[in-house]
Length: 322
Ligand SMILES: [Zn+2]
Image (cartoon, rainbow, N blue to C red; front, top):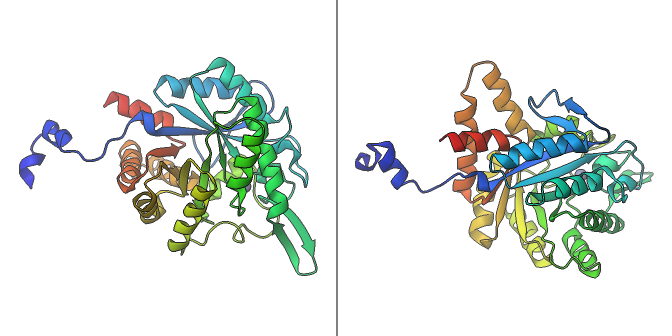
C-alpha cells in the first residue's frame, strides 16, 4: 500500500476526497445599526454585524472563493408572534437587500425560524395550559411560510428552514409557489438533532429558550433511522438540499443520508465544533488549521457536498495557499 504514498504528488493523484472553497457556506449573524461589530465571546472571530459590516464580511469571504452565506437575524424587539421574522423591513430582509445590491453573485441563503424573534425563544408558537407549555405545530407553519416569502421578496437566493416543525417544507414550498417564487430552492435542516453542540450559537443569536428545551421538536441524538424518515419526508415535501446538523458527531447519519437518497447534502459544523477547536488551539494543544481542514475533509468523505462552517473564510484562505 505504501507505493502510492511516497510523494505529495502521488498522494494527490490517488486522493479520493477533495476540499474546495466552492463547497463552503459562511453563517453570519446580523443586527440593526451601522458599523456594529459585536464579538461573540464563545466564538473567537465571529461577530454580530450590522448590515453594512455584514456586506464587508461577506465580500471578504467571497473574494477568497466562498460562494454563499447563511443569514441569522437578531431583532431589536421580540414578541410572541415572531413578527420580526416576516417584517418587510426586518433585519434579515434589510441585509439580504444590501448583500444582493453590493454582491450580486454571492448566494444569499436565509435561515428560516422563529426562535430569534420569539420573546420565549422557542421555534414555534407556544400554548400554555395546566400541564405546562406546548409548541404548536400547524399554527407555526403559517408564520414560517410568511417568513420564507418575505426573504424571497427581499431577494434571497435560497431559504433554509431550521425549526423542525412537521410539514414546514411543504408549507413553505406552497407559499413560495403561490407568490411566484417557483424557482427558489429550499435547503431543509432535515435531520437536526437536539444537541449540546449548539451552546455557543445561543449567545451569538440570542435565542436561548426562556423555559424548557427543544427536545419536543428537534431530534433525539440516539436516532439515526428516524433521521432517514425525516429526510425522506422533507424530500417528499419539496426540499432541494437536505442538511444534517451537527456535523462531526453525526458523520454516520450524514453517510447514511447521502447513501440512501443521493441528494445534494449539507453538513453544518455547529458552534461548539468551532469553539472547541478555537479554545484548544488558543492553548497550544492542537494545530487549528490542520484540525479544521481534517474535520471538513471528514464531512466530505462521509457524503457532504456542502459544508456550512464559521471557519469558511479561513478554510478558503488555507485551501488557496495549498
Ligand atoms: Zn429556531
